[in-house]
Length: 265
Image (tube, rainbow, N blue to C red; front, side, top):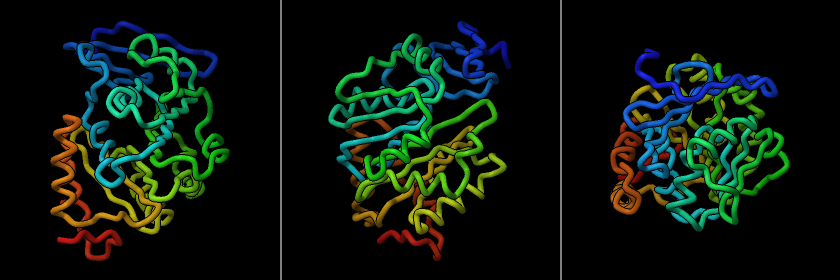
């Protein structure tokens, strides 16, 4: 598998004990943490677009909260989503908290992460204490944090999801990227359901098995299927992302009779 990649950067960072591997193949640059698993990817000729399907699926919060003012992202990686928001949703103020200083450096050097300005701020720090110190501070909270072993251990506790919920403002939305093959997948879903009072939606985003979970602080104002489908088409035209396909996946996988979020058909 290594032959598929042209390795262009490797460094063992001793101060925070993480290996960063940046590879390049067919015009796409990718970030890895000590393995072949891709954490982030960027098409070199389109550095501000969302290359990986799961990152595009994470933007589905726009279907339910079209004009958020603030977004908090825990985990930077190759900065795909912060760059997209910075370029295409300039009215949103983004704060990103990344625990590894070298990840921030590599994102600037090799993934076109712009410098901090009035609409984007990248902070070196631990996301959990940051969230505890900033309750009711954001409209959208995105969790896309991975280490070489997967989702960090302290990101699976019930108290972690309680802290996530506490950061949201009225009508706020929680968005998390998890793996369907993760041995703790059912535990994540169960705890998110408990914390968000079963107000969650799961969006499969295709290979390699990323599942995007949306958790709502309160019941979405709009649950009419026809209206949401029209909104998805409009968002697709505006941002060039496959919102309609994601909406169809959402409808296929969130129709249990016992589900709290019932769509109006």
